[in-house]
Image (tube, rainbow, N blue to C red; front, side, top):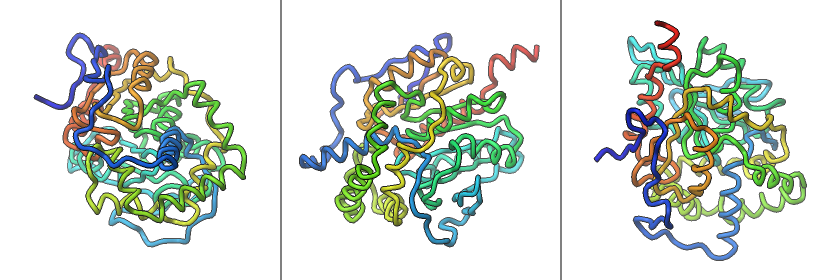
Length: 348
């Protein structure tokens, strides 16, 4: 049975959520956290919804961390960019990949090459405060900074994909007129709820941000085994050592925790307009056993974007593009390769 559970012909957005009417039973027992660790884990879960518009000290100038790395200046900020050229003869839409909380271009190490092999030129970047980009904010919203830069890379329209927190930036870009050809949201709702909007207010206090940043650094960033525990919860399986290293190395850069937390008090774009987003061809990819984001968040998104197609990845957690790369790639490639029915109708 194909683990990609999508919409069937004639019912493009009728989808079930297997096992989500009851608590998900993990396939293996993950180590339980003590009281303070649970509270900190809850904070990190809240930060999955945080803004990528960040502040903090800038890192030193580094050598490119990957063979296809380069550093570019976007709105005056040094940003780590990776590019995968399309396979010979490829004519697919240009693709932008945007990571989630604690992630980086490393999160797309499987998906990006698969998209390039399918004929799409692919760009991924580390948002400020993440990966190998500067720990300083864009002077305007992330979408405002990325829009002109993307148009200089390829004329578009673009195919956009965001994971978790990255869905918020994708939504900002997708609302630009004629900018997005197709959109994929993985394990994230780009439309903030009123409760999520209110939760940001506490992070306006510099003292509170410094306290929590110090707590994260002392309890997590100096303890690889605890980072591994968090990754295990996201993956729904035990991470391999190279996966832990791939996440831990950029997280241990000076000023990262404070920069991420400061995102709550930085400039935010206006709340996403669900009606405008629903006019863009959209696929939502969700892990069947995602224990980071509650099923209610997915159900709310289904109501807000009624035209979206869905693919539920069986057995996957919060990062299906990493733990189930083949199934995720098939769903994403099908979405980005499909002809928009509205375009097909206009061409007749």
